[in-house]
Length: 338
Image (cartoon, rainbow, N blue to C red; front, side, top):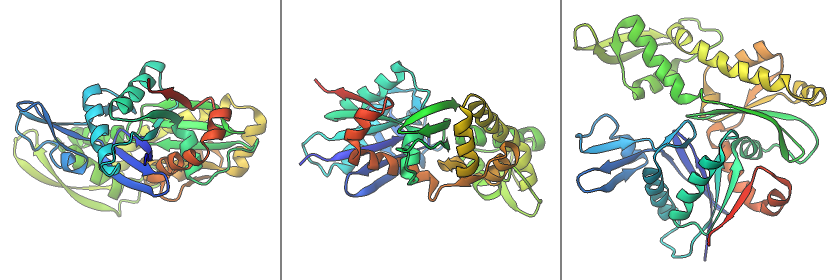
C-alpha cells in the first residue's frame, strides 16, 4: 500500500510526516559523504555529529542553503535515505508534499521536485511555508480574515498575510537561524578575539539570546580558540553579548514585517491588529523576539505552540485538504511523474 509523505525540507532540519501517523522523523539536514568510496556515510543526526570532526576525505555538508537546494546530488541522496526510513521498505512509490519558501523561483521549485521524484515519489505537490505554518498552528485560513505569519527557519524567514485560502502579501528574507549563529561567532571573534564553532554559537543562542530587554543575569561558559595565542580558552558571556550580536539581525525581520504591512489593504491590517502576528519556526523561540515585534510594529505578537513542528503539521493537514488545495490554492503545484 502506498503512503502519503509530507516533507518540511528545512535548511537546518528535515521533518517528515506520514498521513495518519503525524510526525515520524525530525533530523538535521546534514549528509556525510565519503569521497574515496563515493558513497553516503550517514544522514541526519549521525551526520550532524561529524561536522568539523571528520578526516578530509569525508565531508559533512548541509545541502540546503537559504531554504533552497545548493547541492542537488547530496539533497537527492538525503531525501532518498529519509523516504526509505519512513516508507517501511515498501515498494510502492509515495505521494509527497514538499514545503518551499514563498520567494522560491521556478528553477528552485523544479530542483526540489526532481529531487523528490528521483528519490522515488510518485506524485509531488508543493505548498508554500507560510500556508503550511498557518495550517499547522490551527488557523482557519478559509475565511476572508487577515492573518499574519512570520516563519523563521534555518535559512529563510517568510513573512506573509493570508486570507481566504491564499497569500495576499509576502516577503522572504535570508535572515534566519543560521545567520543568527554566524552573527554570534562574529561578535565573539571581534569582541573577545576567540573563535568558536557553529554548535557552540547555536547553544549560546538557545540558552542566552534576548533581543529586547537583556539584564546581564543570564551567563554561560563557552570554549574556543584564542586567535592571538592559537590556544584553547574558556570565556563567560552574558545575554548582553547576545543582544549586541543579534539585535540588528532581529530588526531586519521587523523591517520585513513593516514592508509587508505597508503594501497590505487597510481592511486586512485592521484584522492583524486584532488577530495578532503569529511566529513559527525554530527562530520564533529567539528570546525577546515576540516582545520586540510587538513594541516596534504595534500589533500583538505571539509564538505558536511547538513552533518548530508547525510547518510539518501543516503539510500533514494539507493531504486531507488536497482537493481544496488544488482547486483553491495557486501556491500548490502538482507535478505528474511520467
